[in-house]
Structures are given as structure tokens and as C-alpha cells.
Image 1 (tube, rainbow, N blue to C red):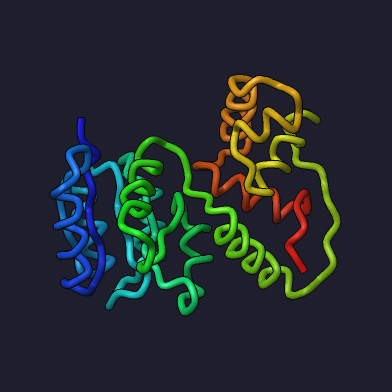
Image 2 (spheres, one colour):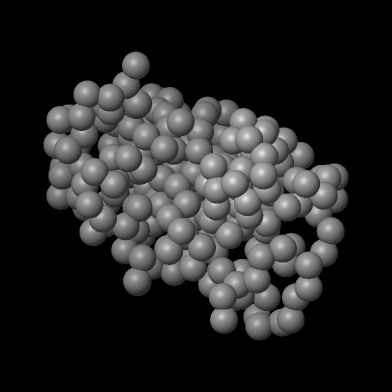
Amino acid sequence: MSVRVVLADDQPLVRSGLRVLIADTPDLEVVGEAGTGADAVRVVRDVQPDVVVMDIRMPGMDGIEATRQIAAGPGSARVLVLTTFDSDDHVYGALRAGASGFVVKDMAVDDILAAIRVVAAGDALIAPGVTRRLIADFVKARESGAARSARPVAGITEREREVLTLIGRGRSNSEIAGELFITVATAKSHVARLLTKLAARDRVQLVIIAYETGLVTPPG
């Protein structure tokens, strides 16, 4: 079955380009488009896609509020933020609103298509060199430079705390398994339990929790 995608961007040229690219990809299918955040919420409600590729800056309701409404809605659509990283600080808000990851508009086409598949599969796009920087800057902004120390995360075991710390550092399941001398299957089980116990939508939210609780320190 193909992944059903909604494109939300106020630039028709961007939507058209993505639509053409996806049309040439057998496992992806565009089932709707929107030029505003409000339209995106409506289209998602009507067509129930798997993934929404969401721009941030759109007229009226922006992509952050649209993401929040979609994430809180009854459907299972997941949001992949489409942004120009160097100029769009609002991506922090989108991650907090429930986005499952983001792609940058000048990324390679294959990487954008791969990101859609990753998000559709229920994972989150954690690009080690970029996403960690985004979240670290976000946390530093929230803390206004105040010193933070690690504090307990209620309801998780010591092993789960170790796994959460490694997730916050951008480690994959296989890397977590290697560092903790456990199997990949066990690492996946720990991640699944963390998602449930911490009511996290996906791996991006776990990374944010790791930063916000001080388990991971933003780079200086």
C-alpha cells in the first residue's frame, strides 16, 4: 500500500514540484493539497492521510497551529515540517506542537522522500547534525540561559533513563544496543515503553524530554 500524503505550502510552485516528484514514486501518493494552515486541517480531516508535509509560514493559520490541531485530532496523520532552517525559528514550535520531524527545502530529493517514509512508518526524522541543534537551541531559549541540572523522569527505570539519554544524543536503536550491550530488539522495546510511559508521540518528543529534563546538555 502506498503512503498517502497531503502537501501544505502556500507556494503553488513548491507543491507542484513535490507532487511531480511523488507521482514518480510508486510507494507514495498525493491525496490532497492546501495553501493555508486552515485548509491543511480541513483537508487532513477530509482525506485522512498518513503524512502531511507542512510548511511553517502560511497566511492566516500558520503551520505550527495547523500541526497542533492535526496532532491533537482524531486521525493518525503525522506531520513532517518543511522549512528553510536558517531563517525559520518557528520550527521549534512545530516540534512542540507534535511534528514528527522536518526536512529542509534544499535537501536532496531522495532525502525528502525518505523522510516521508520514515515518518509514515511511525518513527521520527532525527537528523543528528541538524535536529539536535534545533532542539538544543529551543531548550536554551526556553530556559533563558538559566543553569539546569538533571532531574528524575518520573515512572521510568534506570535502564530506560539510560536509553532516553542516548535518544537525546541522537543515537539510533542499533547504536543504543551497542553502547548498552543489549540486542536491537531490546533497545526497541525500551524505546516503545518510553513512548508509552512519557506519553510521547514519537522519537522527536523523547529527544525534547531528554533536553528539558537535563539528561542531555545542549552543546555550548
